[in-house]
Every structure is written in C-alpha cells, then in structure tokens.
Length: 199
Image (cartoon, rainbow, N blue to C red; front, side, top):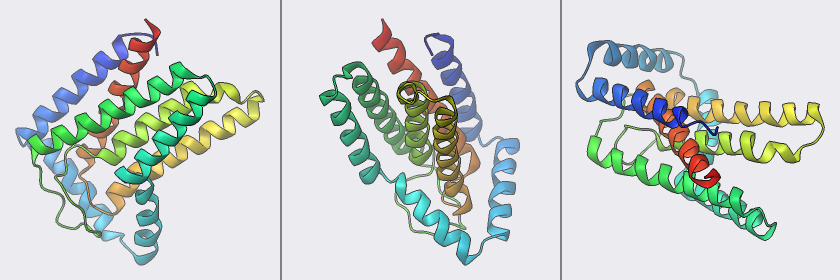
C-alpha cells in the first residue's frame, strides 16, 4: 500500500467512470439497467429483510460511531498512526462522497425497496465499507498471530464488505456504477492516507 500508483489508478478509474455516467454513456446506463432489472426480478421479502439489516450497518451515523470508537481504542492503545489513518481515510472518504453526491444529483433507481435520501452517485455505503475493509485487512490483521485465524478474520471482513455493497444493489437504492464509484473512492482515500502517514 506504500505505492503512489494505487491512489493514482483509483482516481483515474473513478474519473473515467464519472465521465461515462455524467455523459449518459449508453453502455454504462445499459449495464446499470440490466443489473437493476435483475435484482428487481428476484426481489422477495426474505432478501429485503436480510439486506435491509445489512445495509443499516453502513448508515452514516452507526458507521461514524463505530469509526470514532475504534479510533479512540487505538489512541488509548498507543496505536496513534493507525488511528490517524482510520480517521483521515474515513473522514476524507465520507466528506468527498457527500460532496460529489451534491454535485452529481443523480436520480436513484425507480425500483428502490426502502426509503432513501440524497442522490445516487456515488454510494457512501460502498465508500465506508471499502475503507473499513482495507483498514481491517492492512492495519489490524497483524494483531492476529495465528495464520488460520488471520485468514478467517480476513474472509469474514471481506464477506461483510461484499454483503454491504451488494445490499445497495439488491435493495435497488443504487445503480451498479454508483457502488463501483464508491469502492474506487474508498480505495483512493485509504491509500492516500497510508501514503501521507508513512512519509
């Protein structure tokens, strides 16, 4: 994660995707519509209940409380650098995501199954999930000494990340390109915070 090419690549890919979305590129819009139609076609009450609970994990208020609590624990444990990386990456990510949302003003899918506020692009849930997933894998997994336990923790973290990102599509509150954009912003913000702290 020390290489500058990681945030640079994420920025370039995000800008390309954003340009395609804002120019209403037929390929991107068509892809988004196919995925939306697919999840709308398989919708059922179990999926809605299950993924509604999953998606609540990534809501701004509970996610912010968790981030602040984790940062506090890291600070009192003398893990100052890790706490700074968490606060910088999550702070920049949430702020940037919210700012882009206000500028973009993209309309959410018409088949959304839960009430939401704000515009669609990018997905803040995907941003938060990406930052936390990367933070746990690259910053906290080192405290798990036994190899199989480290693998298990990493798999569980990745699984939660996938479920959280997927929940935004299953519930049709985001287009697929919104979620991809959120993931790219999360990668960008986490890797930039790593570069800043390691200099």
